[in-house]
Length: 211
Ligand SMILES: C[S@@+](CC[C@H](N)C(=O)[O-])C[C@H]1O[C@@H](n2cnc3c(N)ncnc32)[C@H](O)[C@@H]1O
Image (cartoon, rainbow, N blue to C red):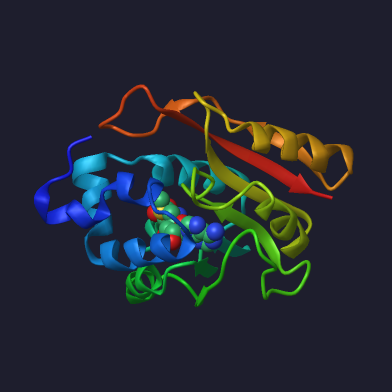
């Protein structure tokens, strides 16, 4: 993956190699203003486009939606184009959220950490989306417990996950939540090439209905 010098701060390697969460936040804060350009021109990230299509197929645009780990709002932008109007965003990085806020597609943008208790009431959202955040050094599989809690019964949780190298802790979490009767599988999408500059990498979009 070749990142042009003017987008160097948004090199995904820097995020994967951050030594702890504080450094990850620092790196995303620094990258925020060039993040979208780096993803579009250099990396060729397509996850937000694929997930937006899946969300549009399963969720009514009148839904109240939470975009978890929303970053600069690349997914939110796509959803706004498809008519979604009531979307809240959260992310670890205030810098990334500042860029998201400026796009004007979210009702509320707040710093919070997936994997920890979230300051939302239970059964708040019709749908929760997570795009490109269930990845090494970012949000753990255990984040799903809180996302299930904040989703209304009958609501959907939709997210991208590596398919060519599926993280085993997610397969385990999927099983655990299914066996506990907390959610049912709606769709495990077909793996698609998600990163133009790294054609071997595949993601899939998962859709679960909360009980
Ligand atoms: C690859 S970006 C994806 C951003 C956005 N979802 C999109 O579709 O463009 C990953 C984002 O996840 C955020 N992030 C990483 N770990 C997180 C965590 N534990 N809780 C919340 N956000 C996190 C980062 O700050 C960054 O904005």
